[in-house]
Length: 149
Image 1 (spheres, rainbow, N blue to C red):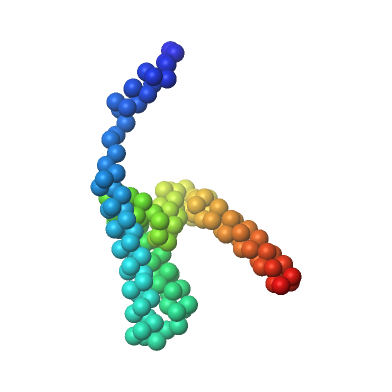
Image 2: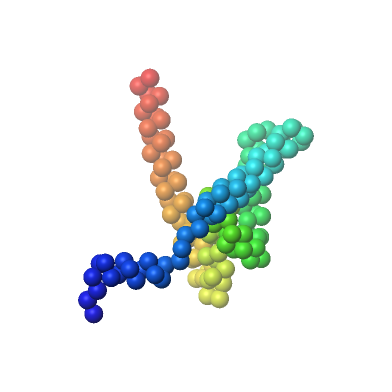
């Protein structure tokens, strides 16, 4: 069956779901902003009231956000939030944790090593690889920058 581009475009326009960008974009912005605001509030509480250093507070809040995201993913709550908030839940650090845990949950029937262990690195692997490679490149550039200054 040979379908012209125009006919294909007409068929696609009829079957594709209509975008609700007027609602989705502000909601994603608000939810993503709320997640980040919770993180910033946690850092503020740790630095001002608990007298924790800024770097230490940032690390603990990042760990906490990842842990809460992982637990919420395991309980199925993160998917429900993501259904309404869209990209707002994917952009912050919590989205990465959700992606890693979701992959592990899908592969749990295949076992600990070949299932969960392998699928976790499906998501985390590229991040670790490119993060390490980028830090090496930046380190080399920084080294030469300071060498010739």
